[in-house]
Image (cartoon, rainbow, N blue to C red; front, side, top):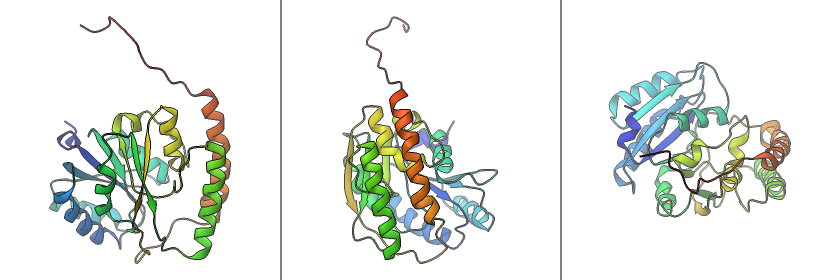
Length: 244
């Protein structure tokens, strides 16, 4: 039995070399679980960390029955870690947050309040606590992506998202496609809602993003999405006698 079957909502936390944040993650996540709108568990995805992240995650999971982990053999990037977590999730709803604690799991309740009526509910980072150059990069990338995808999403980089797991499992992932989750849900004729959430400065660890993977690579991924959109297969069965 997949242990996430016992829960309604699974929070995926991709982790790559975040040893200094694991203790804080344990605190904020364990505080959130009792007040979550749905019965919730946590699934850490260790993305081939080379520091003590995995050992710290194992220690955390040994102390909490609703904390689980999977560990990837090598680093595959954020999209790979999210896909691995989704693939191993069996709860009705699945979401994720970054391990850098620039968002708080407390705000998942803002998203969960509407998840029964939308296939994806996602955050918009209000009053972003990033340096000026990072905010400019994100603004340019978001504007270009919106023009290419026409998904109407203001802040696709916000790491607080909640989805219906069956929709999430049908998403065609490849490297960089975590930025296109809203557009990929729309391809399935899913409904999307955006909700303002809080944002905080990073206080531990180092950012894994730079000019290439924040700005240049997403530009190229937009063309990959446009290619896939034209060829996307989407069907719904109207009737069948296959089942008794």
